[in-house]
Image (cartoon, rainbow, N blue to C red; front, side):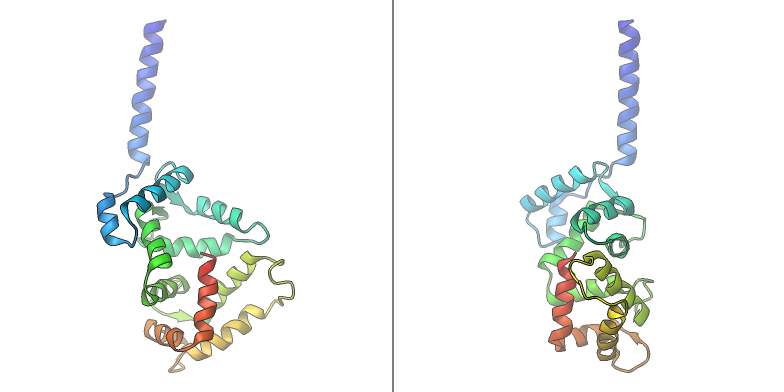
Length: 207
């Protein structure tokens, strides 16, 4: 009996280890991430511990991402915004976010230059990843942010508020009036208009 139990235990242990090697993702060397981001090795170790705590497999899928955001914004519906944000973090479009993806984005959002933050935000708004932002994409993101903040934050919000908000911004950004905003137009508009910059900083706070 003891021998049989020990055999079962060893077999299960080997299976578990096999499963772990298949499922778990080990990040690249922290030295490499330290060189690629604005975090110190110590900060990266702390971030990795937190990441592993939330996501033991070493990767986050979209569902987990939505659950995490739902905890932060209990009064609103964060699922749509979390979906867009997840796609911006998932730069390789694999359907999962590794620690490297997560920490690279975090580095830009927390410690990047204005230019880097704006490029990242442009990528978030460019939902279909065609290299441009159209008005509907911008409306979708802004509406998702309003939905996430919930009715307690915006008690007098009307249904058409996101569209009105975007109309003003889009008009300023679409310099050549061709119905789309390029990265250059986006960067130029944001850096020359304090109102746009302030709004984007407000939106970055919910990341």
